[in-house]
Length: 53
Image (tube, rainbow, N blue to C red; front, top):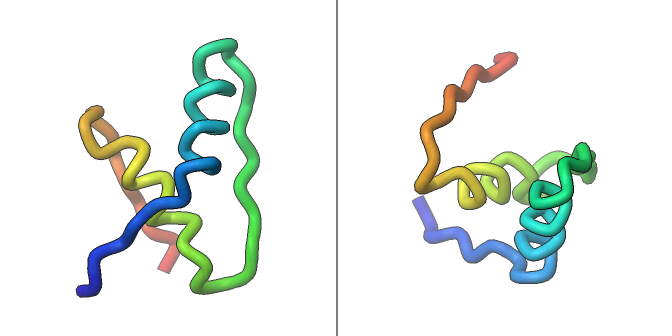
């Protein structure tokens, strides 16, 4: 798997929303890295991932 480099601005916005308790809505076409962005955000936190596939 190729290493993913998350967009700095997107991670910054997610962190800002989390700090004030806002909901984050992430959207985009298939293959643009939405799931990987969230995984990068949660990489040092415990979480459960369940695929719809």
